Length: 84
Image (tube, rainbow, N blue to C red):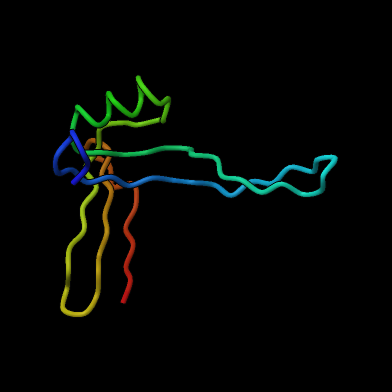
């Protein structure tokens, strides 16, 4: 539940990066993609803050003692993940 946007589900890809600079190695993160299931937070994140947000269907479910996460982009299953 995000302030001003209500309840929605989001999944993203963040890639760790590093830069060799004069001060040494600087570490950071590159936000490659963010998938959400609601239009207002997509518009806010993309148009106001410049995040690469797209409409998709991220889901979390509980199967006994395992959390199952799925991400569908249209009719295509993009990712499935589990965690005990």
